[in-house]
Length: 281
Ligand code: C2E
Ligand code: MG
Ligand code: MG
Ligand code: MG
Image 1 (cartoon, rainbow, N blue to C red):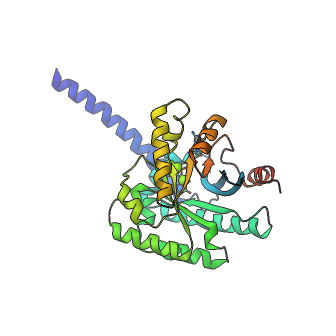
Image 2: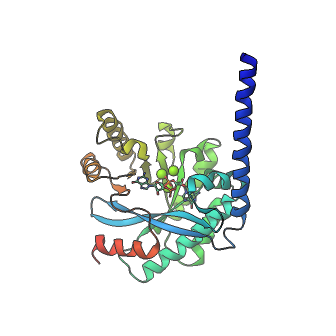
Image 3: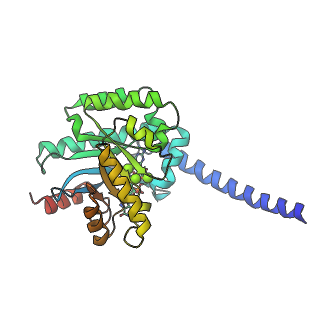
């Protein structure tokens, strides 16, 4: 009985794998042409700075609409883009769009200069030529380096710590900001935080969303904020969905909040309206 059970389980697993694999292949095929076919769009989500009550920066979030697959969520296609290496071209495309858009806003004086953050996959960050790509991007038009921020996750640091420090140091010397994204859920060694020349931490939303109800979670977030400030890092809270959570984070000394309460990620025109409304210019 055990044997046949085992086989059944295996068959179910195999069917699931096949299905899963087929779906991934379909996504990959369409993803290969998504840039050429103009199927990507970048959305922008503001980060609200507590000390000034203004939007000082925003994150770009990629959106993909394919005529056959419809809207595909990043959590679905980014992992496939990473597995297939397509992420490198995609991240480069996003970086270029972000640079152009931010230059346009700054030239048009939408508000005081905004910093634009771009997500870079761990795989991409670890490539030897990543830093020179950023350098080239900045050179193309004079977007001030301090108006660009790179968001990387802790998985970027799994191997070759020295290389990472080297790349981070070059970025810092160029004046580009670097944030650790989804902080707290990955391989978090307090030791690397001290060694790495980074500018901010983004506390993962799984910690943030609990703090209104859960005292222990408040203690963890408080400790993260304390530690960051000791290390001269700014702290951004991700996934702030309620006024209550935002007020709590303000009391805890968090520097910036990003989440649905202030705004969802939105297209360009809508983002401009939100900035004008909140920054009042
Ligand atoms: P992330 O960089 O941690 O981005 C934050 C995610 O949280 C976004 O999901 C955003 O829409 C969502 N979010 C923001 N505020 C809230 C909130 O208040 N509540 C909740 N529940 N969610 C909130 P999204 O846009 O689906 O992106 C998911 C992930 O995909 C990103 O996580 C990032 O890791 C990746 N990604 C998105 N765009 C790019 C890109 O251009 N390049 C790369 N390499 N990765 C990207
Ligand atoms: Mg991010
Ligand atoms: Mg995040
Ligand atoms: Mg994430």
